[in-house]
Length: 257
Image 1 (cartoon, helix red, strand yellow):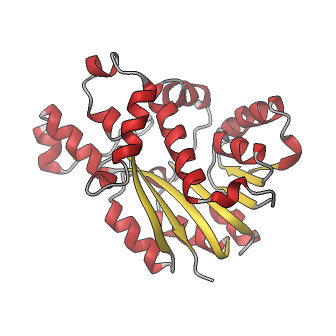
Image 2 (image 1 turned 45 degrees about the vertical axis):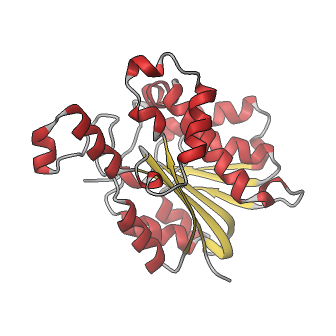
């Protein structure tokens, strides 16, 4: 497995991942979690933020709109080109530094540079998850927070149980096909937490993202408003054992002073 580059399919990625209720919920819930747990985001003081592997830049735009200085990097030139168009349309180009580079390359050049680091839906696409976590931590100032969201293996197991995919369950074969938009490296939450703690981080908050929505049959989803589903996601997403069962898991971590 190599780190996934979305050059050539960026438009398809944008439509299939974010042009629907699934993408809307993911962005909305993750953003609400950040605002809820990090009230400093809404303060007057500008923070230095790294959106690591930030792709289309949705989070970068929201953070820049709050007045923060954001570095957005990705290895896909096509994804960054789409992001740059949205950033320019929002009038935020001066506040965003867009770089085509790997997470490791950014980290090596800007050690302990950032007040906040985001890495959303990246770990499941890379060859070496531990290396990425080490690079993210290297870019953090003491006292800094890391917002990490990843595709959850637990949710895939539940989904395959519900669908009766006996052979997948027997063989523990949950990776997506190469070239598709299902991630090839779904993450085990407890393993990721252990890697984060080994890297010196404290876990501040845990939340499952897209728990309620993904458990609903499609016919039921069609009859429920996004607002109602989002309210239930928020109500249960941080509770035991539900945080570890969402299609994605969001972890907020802190590097001690």
